Length: 100
Image (cartoon, rainbow, N blue to C red; front, top):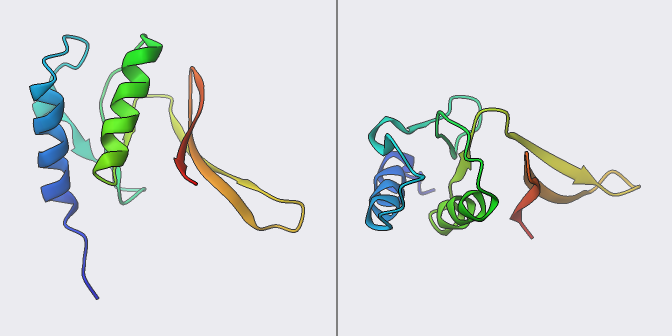
């Protein structure tokens, strides 16, 4: 069984964010892996621009990571028969799907 190297994925993710040269993404070197969700990345500040928050989410998913701003919550929806329908991040802008 292959173990995912989240530290390497985090570095690739941060490099792509740096290369975007988007001023809304700050202190990228301080972004770190969360302890409670194995593939979540703690950003450390709130992104108040919806388009930039969606961009961050999409780039994170490209690397199998879930970028989280303070106040964001990883959650799941269940069907009536208790099967997982989808997972998502609940943000100030609504739900951002993690996986289909």
